[in-house]
Amino acid sequence: MRTTAWPDYALVDSGHGRKLERYGKFSVVRPEPQCLWAPRLPAAEWDAADALFDPSDEDEAGNWRFKAAPIAPFPLGWGDVRFNGQFTNFRHLAFFPEQAANWAWLKSRVESAGNAPKVLNLFGYTGVASLVCAAAGAHVTHVDASKRAIGWARDNAALAGMADKPIRWICEDARKFVQREARRESRYEGVILDPPKYGRGPNNEVWRLFEDLPEMAKLCAGLLSDNASFILLNAYAARISGVALAHLLAQELEGRGGRIDWGELALQEETTDRQIGLSFFARWTPA
Image 1 (cartoon, rainbow, N blue to C red):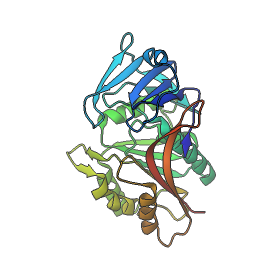
Image 2: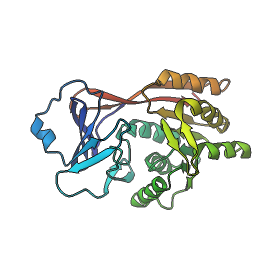
Image 3: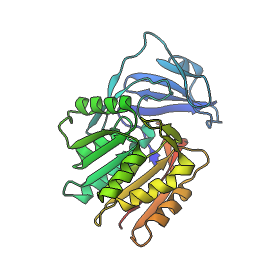
Image 4: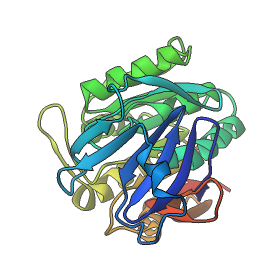
């Protein structure tokens, strides 16, 4: 799947291990080691960026350098949803623009499901996917282990004028929450599972993608209702692939029928066909 530019975001150029992006009115330079090619635009356009990220290690930590004063959180939008862009210490701006291709797919699945489907968003971070689903008519349960991320998600809902939408904000370890929902025999029409490679829960629970994803996928498959519309599995890890995620879903959904698509999620430059692959996905629908 390819994410192309929209009014508040564009991948402007890429190359020599970096990418030049536009977020609203700001231009931003971030590292991207897989950009082995040369940039198209002259160095002056890169040098004029409003913010540049200097990495301090390979785990995405580092610091921002700003052309002028540090930039406070600022509003952005995608479709009917508004949210804040903000410069974090982990090179991203509190959301992942390549996920716009998934947002469009989720919007269509919720709308086609009808009748206020229940959607579970695990590792929901700052909530853009939750807001997209809620705007399309879903009742959303948003789960993240970070109190700070839940706060940002609530702020985004308020910014979008969606504070009164049917969204449950739950700060809890995602695995513990899903285990409890399985015991309660709770059911959902849609599940979004977008886990990190590594993480810790609020009570120091440890999440390791390759060790823990099989159990989580099994539990999530068990939460799907008889008239479920989708399950979306997304992962950012160099050692995983879309086909691996698809085989995992196929195993856990055996007997349900339907269709599993899989692949790589990529950002496409605004004026060329060059793309940067950033994550892998697998997604099930009943037909």
